[in-house]
Image (cartoon, rainbow, N blue to C red; front, side, top):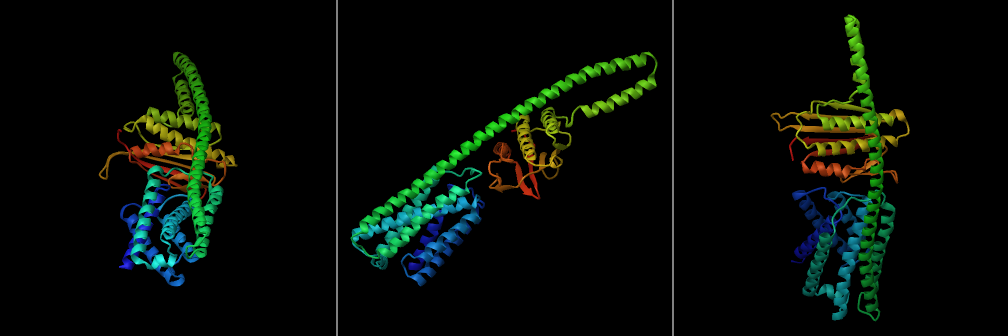
Amino acid sequence: MGYALSLLLNITQTYCYTVFFDAFFPRKRTGKLFWGATLVWGVLMFLLTNAVAAVQGPSIGPLSMLLEPLLLLTLCIVLYRGNLVAKLFILMIAYALFFSASSLAKFIIMALLGLSQNALIYNRPLYTAVLCMLSASTLFLALAVRHFHHPQQPPQTQWPWLLLATSFPTATLLFLLLFYSAFPAVSTGFNIWIFCLFIMAVANILVLILVDRFQRQMQKREKLLAVGERARMQEETITALSAAYTAQRKLTHDFKQYLGTLSEMIAQGNLEQASGYLKQVQTWQTTRTLLVNSHNAAIDAILNQKGYLAKQQGIDMRFTVNDLSELKIKSLDCTAVLGNLLDNAMEACKKLPAPQSRWVEVRVTRTPPGAFGGASLFISVVNPSNPVEIQGGYVTTTKPGSFAHGFGLPNVQDILKKYNAEYVLSYDNGKFLFSSEWPDIPL
């Protein structure tokens, strides 16, 4: 009976940690895989608890305080996405908070009943009731945190201050270890230590709130920087469009001159000379008009505009398209996705030192309906880039102060999710890839 209760309490405790992690990190696993792993870890915690108790006795010791967080950190790494340092901080805060809160409640009960730790542990009915109460309160605390906090995109530079913040819950655990060893029974200074423990429990909550607020402020700062960068990109876009408009007016003016020259040749009967002149004009004008012609006005406009802008910046932008005249996806959504992806790619290329390494390969092709499903739009953007780290669907550059592909990606992902489109981000051998298979359906 005792082992069954211990197993149930350890599984419940592991579940409490997963609830707490849910408030800060998106899950890697879902459904049966997630709950199966949680159950396995609960059993491992049970085995660990009993193994440690056999070595150091039923009291809390340094061995359990070392092994339990390591096992829980492994659980967090396996089940959740996110930065390792952030996971370490949240784990230590959760462990210190749960441990200090439950210890505080247990010590208050010991003080009220005048019992020592060993006396409480060996009073099986009372100790069982206390453990059940502590498990219920821990679960309530974890559920409250998950209710008021939700996972969010982490700031790009956070590990130094997160490591610093992790030192506080670590100090709390050391304090608890000292407390357990110093007060095996009720003494005259017991109430003072209980008060100190209460202050440290509250302080851990405040540290979590302050770190979370600091993280939100960093996110706001990054968004403001992104807005400024976006404004600069829009200014470049307007300049490129103005240049394209000026070039188009010049083409119209030149076209009138070509017609006049051809008319004069034909009027003089120089048909062979006029034919050769016309072929020259056709070849020359083809090189001066659209870089891309997909028979879709909106997509041609955005691709050609970005192509001309890339030329001005010394970036070789290569296009592969097919006939997109029958595309059913909203033009506004499609151009927003392409515009953001190409802006990000050009921004990454501009950070590279050698102009000859600045290139972007763009593929926008439509697959018609077939035996294996409906029509779809395939988008692929590949470009060289400085090293970047991809975590949880977000891009985090390894260079402080540089945002690489970060601009606009959340907007791109939000649009693709509306259509249930699949997308992939990857970085390998100095190349960044974003590709998506987009169902060609009207939304």
